[in-house]
Amino acid sequence: MLKLIRNIETFAPEPMGLTDLLVAGGRIVHLGASLGQLSIPGLEIIDGRGLFAFPGFIDGHVHILGGGGEGGFATRTPELMLSDVIQGGVTSLVGCLGTDGITRTLASLIAKARGLEEEGISTWVFSGSYGIPVVTVTGGIESDLLLIDKILGVGEVAVSDHRSSQPTHEALCHLVAETRRGGMLSGKAGLVNFHLGDGPRGLAPLWRILQDTEIPASQMLPTHINRNPLLLAEGVAYALAGGLIDLTSSAPPPEAGSSQIPAAQALKKILDEGVPLERVTMTSDGQGSLPEYDAAGRFSGMGVGKVRSLFDAFRDAVRVEGIPLPTALLPFTANPARILKLRGKGHLAMGQDADLVLVDRGTLELHTVIAKGRTLMSAGELKARGTFERASEVR
Ligand code: ZN
Image (cartoon, rainbow, N blue to C red; front, side, top):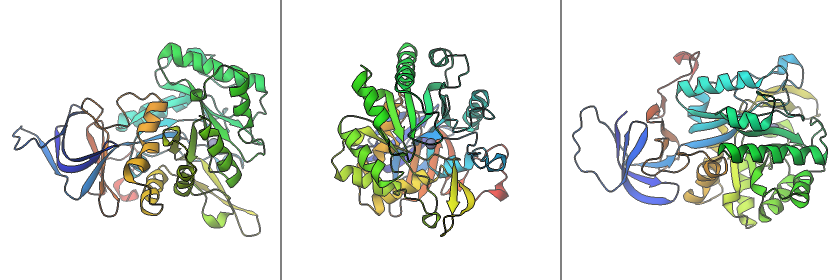
């Protein structure tokens, strides 16, 4: 658990230049000038030359228990495995239910989150699912937030979607208000993660909440904003007015007939439109179902979202879209940590959790993943796997 990373170019995410980084007891205990020759028994030394150090990525929307089921029981997607998390450079995540709030329960969601925590990463969950009234553990949103440490908000609640419960304006106002109050009383984010569908109402339900109530925009995080060009344009206007927006990195293959804009491209567009980037996050929608259609528009099969798509989107943002590293890192690190109030996460500094990803400076390929001081990937090789993953089954 005692590691020294020497001579590594560090983005915290702000650029820090060449640093030595010392990890002890799961925390960063030094980040700065060279420590010289340290002789501490058991000290592991990692040569940082040729690598960049970033904060571990935060994925704020993952169907860790599996999701889907919208084409019948056989289309329920499988549970998340640890290897996919590691291969996404993700060291913290928020689990959520989706369309199905009946056969998927919050009790199971919390159990799965705890399991992933035991396997090495940091986890939280959202209470609720697509529908309103929301499912809860304790019978109420406020008590869920106050009494259950893992719950930091409500989501994903569907709006502007044929699968939503078509909630009234009043019901949505009450939901966001209750979640905010629970967040205030428990010192948590207390925000509602809204699933945005393809419906023409788009972000109108959220605009209306801001217009008709005293609730600040910080209490709502609409996701899937890159679902189609119209919603993306609306998301830009919403963020320019002060709202938070979240992009989704998992996408059906291009031939599947989706109008989704690749997340890296969407991020570039948002920047070009002048949106202050601190209002933007990106999440994977990992383990969500991705229906595929053939050229004739017929249903041809079901894919599943991957957490690792998050890191691919980051790499594309830098290498393909030309977004500078410290800027491109924000939606994956410092922004979600601040918006979701994840203390000790998303930023490299002394006293912060030792959640790190080291990447190749030339290719930006993942090299090393360290979560809470423990090495989960080294030199591109997985060093940890989920309880039910065998080495032979995982790259
Ligand atoms: Zn969704």
